Length: 222
Image 1 (cartoon, rainbow, N blue to C red):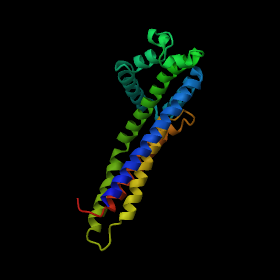
Image 2 (image 1 turned 180 degrees about the vertical axis):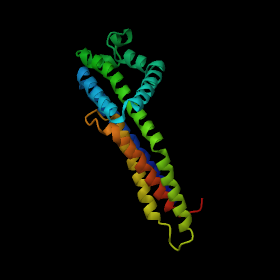
Image 3 (image 1 turned 90 degrees about the horizontal axis):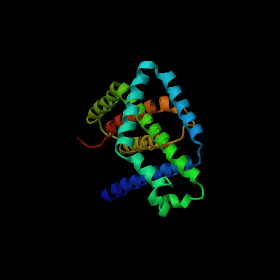
Image 4 (image 1 turned 30 degrees about the vertical axis):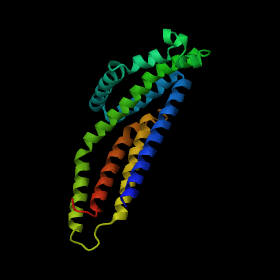
């Protein structure tokens, strides 16, 4: 039984790694092919939709946290510097070879990738800030859901056959599905601006409900 659980956990980890790798690969190809002004307009359109939906005060909070994260985790820690030195064909190392040498016949692809990487990073930090905003806003409801699941579990302790292992596994799969869906949304292009507004809230509430039901159907004593 332990082996089966271990194998299941490993397979879930592999699935997450595969989805994350594919998302990054698709994003990298997208950044090489997408025209920078067009990409910038799509992100600005997404942010404008969010601003109209949230209102001025919440928007300023999300924007401030996004700018801080973008500066700290993309510029200050050297990520942009590494991208620039790796993909800029005019650096001394890349003139001798390196990654940029592969696209030496089409320098615009590399410059487009460097410019779009900044837009992509800002988009990721913006969506993370939206998740944090909705997580803080829905925290009381999430805690209430989880406590409901806990007290339901306590009540089922005194019932014959109250716990259901099968249901618990179903809700654990739901939790994994929510996590994978958020990863996919995090790196997805801005083709659906409204998803950035409400999808994080839906993810948080569904995750809270799944945790609640998993606890409610837990078959062991904590």
